[in-house]
Image (cartoon, rainbow, N blue to C red):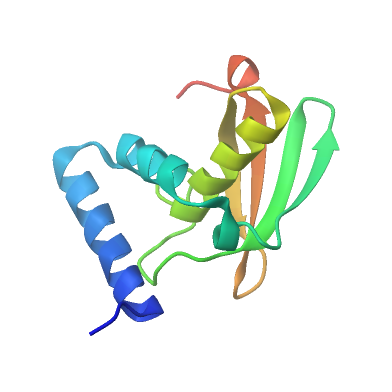
Length: 117
């Protein structure tokens, strides 16, 4: 049987559970995001530069267990990776929120300017 979008989301949900159990969820998501291809993940990515911030909007492609948080959203980490590559600066997720039922909005800062909590 060939993989389907549903089976891919099951893999993502399992990955999140394992990362949580190991206490490595954020690191694991960042590594996975860096390995994912930019397309089809970022086909409708839009960016707005605003002083030291980058505001991004895109389709939210995570599974149903995703809470769209700055420490647990694979789509947000993929945006972080893509924006870092495009700008040549290491970016960090500052804020994540849903932007309608199937979209997500992410605010990023250069790592040197991000808050540390």
